[in-house]
Image 1 (tube, rainbow, N blue to C red):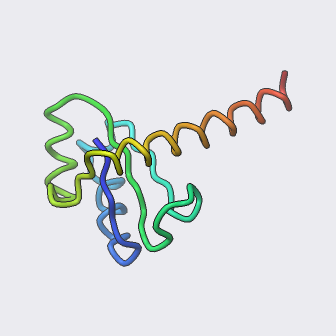
Image 2: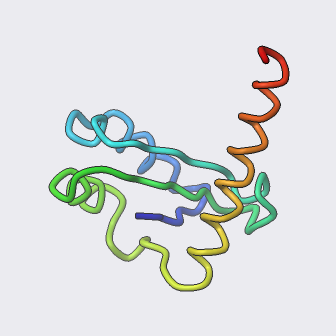
Image 3: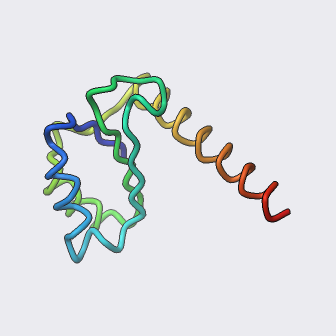
Length: 94
């Protein structure tokens, strides 16, 4: 599940990261500028069991869930950046 927050909503991300239930989720976040998207936004990818995802929705708000083409594009860019970072790390230790 991908969420889109404005930078001034950073407190919601902090609340998610502090939450006991949500801390059991896989949470990745990137600023929009880092992936060539809206520089005033933070994209938050949350993955895990449905019951825990409900906790994340409760904190971040269902209205911030990103879908459609924008979600596909952002997820692709996030994964590409993650893959490049892993390749770089592999060349250091490989």
